[in-house]
Length: 294
Image 1 (cartoon, rainbow, N blue to C red):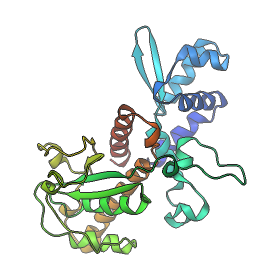
Image 2: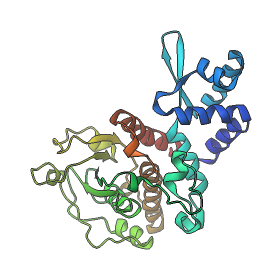
Image 3: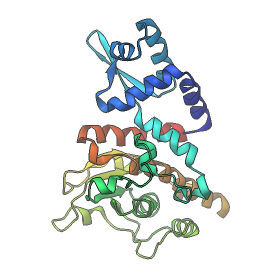
Image 4: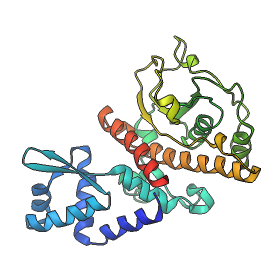
């Protein structure tokens, strides 16, 4: 999310009524609510409610779906998380944990625990570790970067892998340089074929994300585990030409784009959502991020 989109969202939520409407829709979750239900809950005339819903929709905070004679409204959770990520992106020099920002609590609407009570996190709600595969054609930059970031910020909830349809055979030197500059461990990284993840001994995958447009159009192997899939296209930094600082800047931008998306992804309350809702959310992360960054 950029500054213009954030300002638009805050302007829409500056009305107390619209803030109440948005909170009701967040509480309703994927089921959403029709305008009449919202008007009744807040004791507002239907015409007034339509005005407020239109303002929220224009800011991208809610989405409407026609159901017969009515429209069902849902909070755009990816947009909300994008707004929170925009606010906290530089928190404590990029390490939000230092100032007590809990990504899971902040983005799912849970309140901080009362003093003396144990904080409930997604990891305590479910012991499942999600296997995630990132794909790009050469497996030398974008997918490698995503693998490294998720393995670090996933805090044991996710195990990330990466591969390519036509692997370069080595990780691009600038990929390693940018990751090491941010303190990531790059010791075990290698460029590899996606066939490694299609065999009988491959890990059971929960998610597969394509991060380049080329591979998104290819016929992928049959993945074990029936994973959910989404396309999170990112421009290829390897194709950027010019001076070394200019090329390094391209790799840094790629890292930041993927970090923002993965922050949104790791904040999803996966244990509470069904497959359809999760698919909706991971699609939104790719679409919303691409629009905001483009």
